[in-house]
Amino acid sequence: MSVSFSSTSFAFQRPAHLCSNSLTVASNNFDSVPGGLGRLVLNVRSTSLCRRFRGLKLWVLERLNFQFQPPKQPKNRNHHFKNNLENEKGSVSDSSSILHVPDDKVTPMESPSLLQTGLSGAPMDVSRKPSLCIAVIGATGELAKRKIFPALFALYYSGFLPENVGIFGYSRKDITDEDLQSIIASTLTCRVDHQENCDDKLNAFLSRTYYINGGYDNKYGMSMLNARMEQIEGGSKTNRIFYLSVPQEALLDVASCLASSAQTQKGWNRIIFEKPFGFDALSSHRLTQYLLSNFQEKQIYRIDHLLGRNLIENLTVLRFSNLVFEPLWSRTYIDNVQVILSEDLAVHPGRYFSGYGIIRDIVHSHVLQTIALLAMEPPISLDGEDIRNEKVLRSIRKLEPKDVILGQYKTSGGAKVDACLNGLTPTYFAAALYIDNARWDGVPFLIKTGLGLIKHQMEIRIQFRNVPGNVYHECIGHNMDRAVNELILRDVPDEAILVRVNNKVPGLGLQLDSSELNLLYKDKYNMEVPDSYEHLLLDVIDGDSHLFMRSDELAAAWNILTPILNEIDKDNMSVELYEMGGRGPVGAYYLWAKHGVRWVED
Image (cartoon, rainbow, N blue to C red):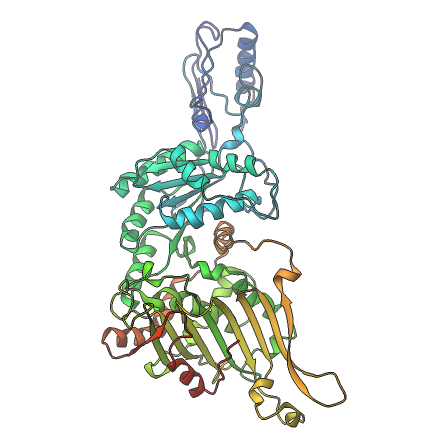
């Protein structure tokens, strides 16, 4: 006898006697059950249990309108996690399982009493089927060990990942699940401001971690990854995130094999790529076209960890939720904007961007995205696409060599450049950018970023114009620049929001002083600030793309920088050497003065 329904097929063959042979209950959905159970098999000759199966069979036959419903996943305690099951390009809705019951074998998918209990009647952990799987490609690399896995565990520990998440590591090393878990465990810590159930959470996270040796054939390796994921997922509807922590030269091959062999057809797929995003405009364009031929734009997340800092996220909050700032956010009141990012002696540039230089590594993504978020037009909503639509990258004027200063640090104790760097690879960049639109016409956006400088500093300074006809100018003194109002957004060394205002010094005289109204985060908020990777990974899970570069933004950024890169390639631009631990090239001071801006040194 055969009965077919709209979404589920049942095939029954009447046996001579239901209980005459051993009874087997099998389900592919139990491939992922831990503890080596694999496929659940029950061999039973009990009369009472036979009566239960006979009754079940009659119940199924009598209710022809039966519809298969998969077991519900348990709700996460934290409502922030969004288990979005909408489909993206290349994904189709979950196809229902086909249940076959040949001879004396019954597979009742909807019977909790039989599926979720063993012979002892104890509940089985069917909730371990993940609703989200995250694969780290390049799992044994330094970035994965130091940043990606710790960030994933921090999210899991804080309740921002589902309890049944699946974590997969993929690389070429011949190691086991246990070896990967040991590697990961050596870098994991629990939050200082939590500390509850740390060991339990750590063990639970590691038990959900699996390793795949991809070897040197990525297509075969991705097929193995897909098979392992499907085994753990057990046929349930599951979303997948792939973090490609691989060298640039391996990116295309890995992405191609992933697209063809590892994407799920039962949920959405999202792909994370590390910067730099190409070497120049042409290589970036080719990379983008290749990616878009395999993935949809909304699947692609180009990650820059510096954009996950709280300072960057606070730019739009500070501006669009405070009336005191929004009316002043234009050329009418703002004189200049300074974006400063300097690394101290602890950072060794030759380690990670030789050949790329600071322009491709930091300016192209982080600095330009910071300016774009700072100067953007008001979006119609907080949706990622609405925010990205209002960024002003296409309005930024192409850079000219006369508005750029390049530098490279010298090795300590000598005049030679660092041997780790290829030629005169810039480790310092200062420039004046202009945005050609009605809001910012004529306002210089000054960039200063370098490595091996005197201190680690990340801040944005917004300097306002002088008060027209200021009646207190005689009380201020000869240097009017020291009396300008400033909004300072600082991330390093201590995260803070500072507003510099003019104030009367207490006393009988009339003397003015420039004072700071100080919001120091460490004094105001008694909490640990999450790492930027945690922030960005959570955005990917939630589908929030506003801190990730879209393809058109990528092209616009290269358009701004290409004239300078071309001049560097032609050796038409000089690179000024500066001492390690110094303040950078002297030429940067002259550049600031040329554009009428005083360079503030703390």
